[in-house]
Length: 123
Image 1 (cartoon, rainbow, N blue to C red):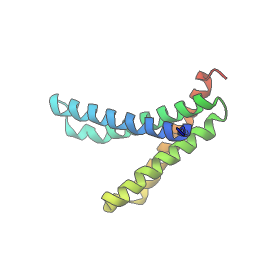
Image 2 (cartoon, one colour; image 1 turned 135 degrees about the vertical axis):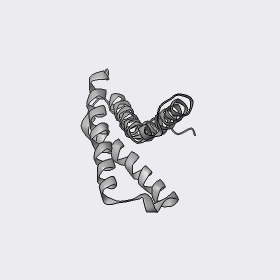
Image 3 (cartoon, helix red, strand yellow; image 1 turned 90 degrees about the vertical axis):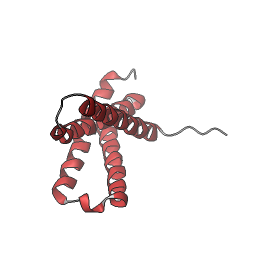
Image 4 (tube, rainbow, N blue to C red; image 1 turned 60 degrees about the vertical axis):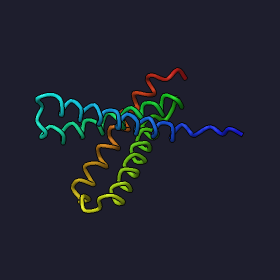
């Protein structure tokens, strides 16, 4: 009766958990150190890249083939989830330039993570 989750959903979950952990770490660092709050935007971009990269790497490593496609699909899934969440909680923060930038970053970092995951796979 216990059905297993697809690898893609596990990878998405790992990406979300990684993003939450890195955001928490970044906010603690900024709060308790002398770092300026102006660094939050570049840190947020780095968190996005690392999170999607990690998920893409995990998914393609689990399958052992089609790393670019699997990584890009995970990046699109992560972006879609972020977009829906933004539509629900703060639709005024959606604009085309940010939309295009975030979609591109998710696709590229997921694809690169997927390619690396193939190299790490044992298949």
